[in-house]
Length: 231
Image 1: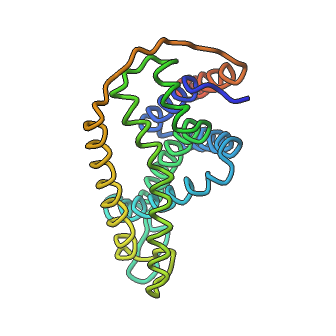
Image 2: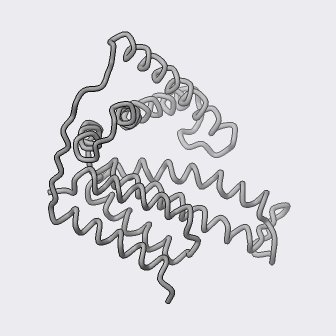
């Protein structure tokens, strides 16, 4: 048994919004850990790819903090690199926010298949097809992006490069073709939908509630109370 799409969608949406609002590190850590555990329960090994994407994002977050928020007391000094207190604080907050957004979205994306999410958003929440279709397409593209990434890393290995990027140039050589392939696939997907005369259909709303939906929404209320109630 697992929660329905509407409850995981509400959970992911509110968690994402709160990640941009709340700066309390303790709250961010608590929420991130709980959301990650939920992802592990329903996503299994797929969570590893989520962690990999977050780790790549953290590199950019750290570089950004080093250049634009590197003020205050010196904490680490290694040669020309000086890391100050404010940079570490900002990096920690943004990193926790990024992890919370990823794990909150993972509760939705890893708990259900892309087709289940598309049907659930239309039937349970009554979202129009022109909103559901892009969401379905984005979720359906994730396995294809993973496949493209594996092929790019394999080609890098064949050319004598390491599979793990350790420099900005290496990261660019992976991200640039990945974005190019994804963009071309999205363009042709849109053209295909137009040629097939895609249009909306009448969908009747049908909502069911189980114990996991209730527990997930109660957990969300606990998050909100912990974030905004003093003390």
